Amino acid sequence: MGAILTLVEPVVIINKLGTSFFEMALTQTVYNQSLKATAGDSDRAQALSSRFLLIQSVLSSLAAMLSIIPLSRMAECHGPKVFLVASQMGSVLGMFTLVIFMYCAVPLEILYLGSVLHGLSGGGPMFWAGVAALASLSSEQGKRTLKLNIVDFCFGVAGVVGGLLSGYLYQMGPSVLLLTAILVSVVALLYSVFALTDSRRSLSESEPLLAESQTGKKMDRISVGMLMTAMVLFILGMVGAENVLQLYVLKPPLSWDSVWAGYGSATTSAMYLSSFIGVLGLFRLLGDTTLTLLGIVSNCTGMAIMAFAVESWVYFLARGIMMFACVPMPTLRAMLSKNLHPQQYGRVFGLLQLVLAVTDLLSNVFFTSIYPLTLGWFSGFCFLLSCAISYISAVPLIYQSGRNLRPGSI
Image 1: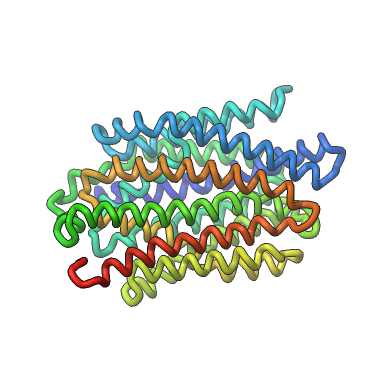
Image 2: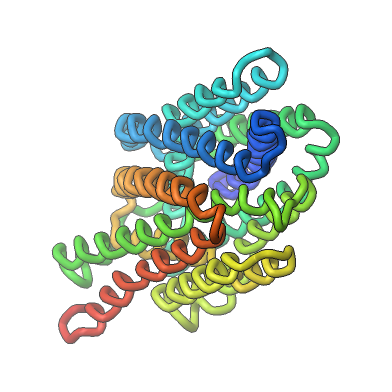
């Protein structure tokens, strides 16, 4: 029973269900309000929604940057569980601002307050820093790639279920969907506070530091730098385009309603399942670097096809080709953790998430700024641009792989 309570997967599953419900409620609410403000003009509503969600993302990311350093210091003293608890408290508080908007005569801009509250508590960056640290602490080096992909698999399962249910819950009423999201998120928070245990003391801290025992201190710095660079480039190309895609499917020619949007969300989350199956079958044969490159190619090829999705079947075809798109990030985190001592996980993963938070912000600003400008001539241009940027993330991996093959480098 004690071993089960060290697993971070239940928190990931329950939290993802709650956030899936909330994201559907938020996106539909913002888009519907934008349609009202523009008298039903879908293109203007797209631009207005895109700008609103961009401001939300910027506020949340900036607030998260302010909280990362103090939260990282707390995590060094009390363990990475601090990241999970703080970020989920902010998430629940942020959700209540949408409740206030629905039941009180207040402007839509009240939702900005929710973004700030979420960010000041650490937001998504700190949640995933805690997840990665706890998952790494509870696994052996040789099985860490599989462990972190199992976490992503659980995330994907919850996303599929949440995506499928959210559209139907929204049709029952936006308030039903939102209140369900809050209830599920509170359950995840309570589990993190009262059930989840920190596994630091159960692990041997004598696990050798890969860089020190095999490649030397200088090589360790280069390895960490290359891995972080690959993650930054991949996120830079992927995050902003994925957020734009949520709006792209709502406008003509696809014109999806909440049910179809739920199917799309479920298909997106299904990539975590297919990625896990791929890792489960291939990680012993291919190795971390090759697996990551496979995921990059899968993601970029599918995103390129998505640029020409004028019918729903093309969208789902592109998602099918992106079946390994979720392999790179957990595998890169596993590769990074293998170059660190367990005592360094909280600080380094916190620093990593700070860098990724900045990258996430830049990606959202970049793509949501370009997207409205392309609506009149080629609205899929953002996805081709995403493909090009994400492909560049393969360069530091190939460089690092080449260094490891040189005589005397290992």
